[in-house]
View 1 (cartoon, rainbow, N blue to C red):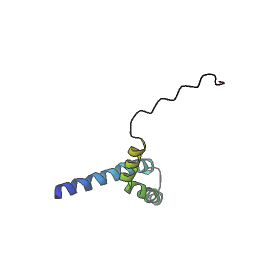
View 2: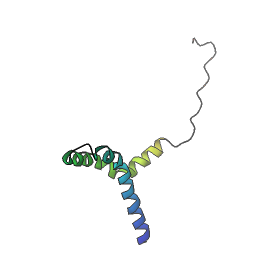
View 3: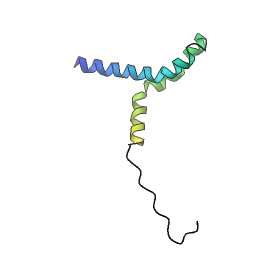
View 4: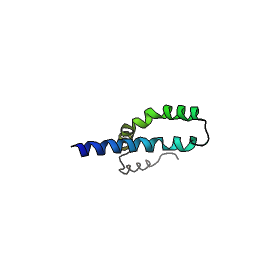
Length: 78
């Protein structure tokens, strides 16, 4: 049971790191420390909620092909 919990915590923290990686990469050498921390703190709520964001993106885009559009009605002006 501890192993499962540990793996879940590790996966969650890796997801947080992956979500914050673009911000860290963009600001590591270019921004002063105070702006760097401000940007990390601003992106932290989104990073901490990455499981919900991933679930919503999967739910909204299930990957199934869309239905083809209906053919135009005959006699309709084009």
